[in-house]
Image (cartoon, rainbow, N blue to C red; front, top):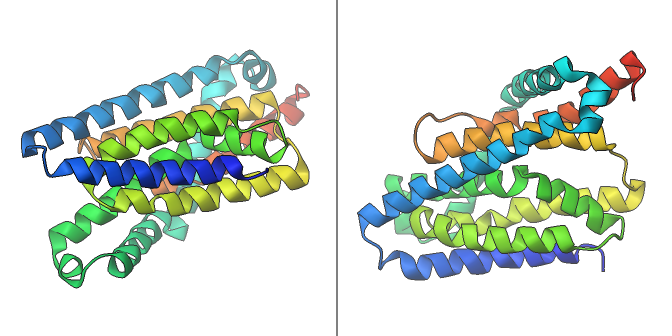
Length: 253
């Protein structure tokens, strides 16, 4: 059944978040801060691992060794300018605020700290669960009928991550299942309609760019700097396009 992987992923996030909220009241404030720092470190590690795709043989052969990082840089700059103009980060936060007003009690909505925590949990969890390459590759595999193995693995990882996220950042994490379902659902539908359209080189560029975005999310989670990662999301679309364009320009695609 096409789309089953995304359904499992959504359920895993909601169940994980609910579990996290059940145990959150038993954790002291110091432990909550430590858990948040650990999550930030893990996201940084994941981002670093994804950057290893810069050395992918197909990617290097397509854009040349000197072009691998330049393509990612170009994608981030073009994507960042586009996302900033579209105010994607602001719209994500506004959507998170709207969700909080619909799914929480009136006193929680009026409480500025609780509202900010809800929005932070929603935005950060949404970025972590949507930016990773498993979201794109898994949805593509599901849509083309190659199975849901990758999305099943992602579901397990997201489920455990949502436990930790929700324990410190609240119920907004559970509602991050909405953008995950919409994003992966659209990718699955696109793959089912068009088939596997991305080359290995384009996928490597996308993975490396996603790694850079995950580094930004990790820095946000650790409160080092509030990088507007949401505004950088268009870079995930720009990176494979640039890779294909450079490859055709050089005659290596």
